[in-house]
Image (cartoon, rainbow, N blue to C red; front, side):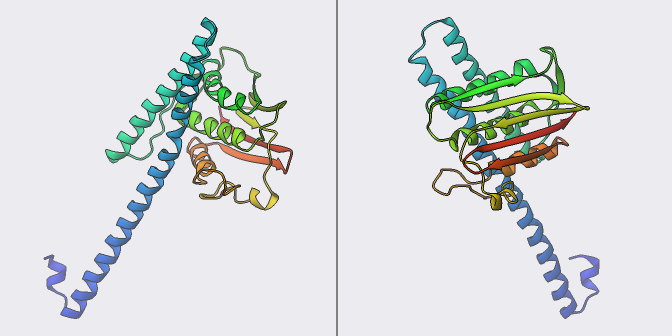
Length: 252
C-alpha cells in the first residue's frame, strides 16, 4: 500500500483505486489494439512470399532452359528473403520493439526487377502483362527499408492483378524515376477502377472494393502506414472501368 493511499479516507481510497484500474485498463486496451493491428498486417503480408513460392513451384513444372530456371530461382530467393525479414520483424516486436525501420543502401536495378518477376506468373495466368520501366541509371541507389518497400510494391501489384479482368492484351505497368530530389514509384493497371466515393476512404483499414474478393481490406492501409514511416506519400487516381494508378513518392 502506498503512502498516499494510507492518507485517504475509505471513499477517496476507493475512487483512487478505481482511477488506477481505469488507467491501467486503458493502457492494456491500447496495447492489445497495437498487437492486433500488427498481427493483422503481418498475417496479410506473409501471403505475398507464399504466393511467390507457389508460382515458382508451378513454373518449375514447365522449365525449358537455364533462363527459365534462373527466373524461378529469383522468385524463390525473393520470397525467402521476404519471409526472413518478416521473421526478424516479428522477433523485434515480441522483444518489445516497434515495427522497426531498417534502412540500407538499395540498388534499384537489383531490388525491383525480382519483386516484379515474382508476380508475373500470377498475371500471366490471367492473360495480363506486367511491364517494368525504370528511367534511372542502372547504378542508381537510394536509402530505404527494402522489406517495407517490397511489401508496398507487392500489395499494389497483388491488387492490380486481382482487380484486372481475365482478358488478354491488358497490362500492368510499374515505373520508377526520380525528379526534384524525390523518388517516384507508380503501379498502373487497366482494371475495374475505383468508384469516386471509395477514393476518399481507400487507405482506411477494412475498406474493401469488392466484398466477394478474399482479403481483410487492410493492404492499402498498411501501404500508407509504411510509406508515412519512410517520410513519403502515396496517392491514387482512378476511373471506373479504365483502371487505377498508385503513386509513391520518397525523399532522396
